[in-house]
Amino acid sequence: ETGVTQSPTHLIKTRGQQVTLRCSSQSGHNTVSWYQQALGQGPQFIFQYYREEENGRGNFPPRFSGLQFPNYSSELNVNALELDDSALYLCASRPGGGITEAFFGQGTRLTVV
Amino acid sequence: AQTVTQSQPEMSVQEAETVTLSCTYDTSESNYYLFWYKQPPSRQMILVIRQEAYKQQNATENRFSVNFQKAAKSFSLKISDSQLGDTAMYFCAFMKLSGGSNYKLTFGKGTLLTVNP
Image (cartoon, one colour):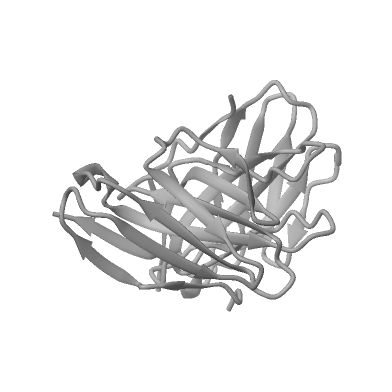
């Protein structure tokens, strides 16, 4: 167990809808990153939040947005869903102090129909 | 931009034997970390082993060891005494060491390892 939990585990949405995925990190983990893992691919970095501010972003459009809260939880929001957004979404958190290990959640499987 | 390449989509090994998974990467950075992550069917990524680029000594964690060749930009994972529980997808990942707190991981496409009884 990594102490990082994601909800829901599975989700089916219709093209054009909006979705919010949630991640709960361990206490003290002030950095959270989100990744998209398409079927048969490695995870792709979406963005990272550090102390509630976005401080890094991958090659994803603005309809992918996020929030990080003081209680070490975070959200990934995706607007105007497209079929290609179907993937496993992983969150990963880190404690402070320069620790490099990322602790991953079990992911949310999003299917867009 | 960094790239990570895993050239073996699938591998299999008999229980108790040794297997090596390959990974190459491309970067212009001099300070970075390399990782091997395991993703079992439960989907949760688990860190197997990490290597700091400035360390010449290869990292070892119990049955897992790496062969890090910085000049060749190669980072292979050796699993000794393979166990059925080692069956999983294995990802090689790169992380640049930056002065700030950006911990972006760049992953390869993965190698599916099957350990046969």
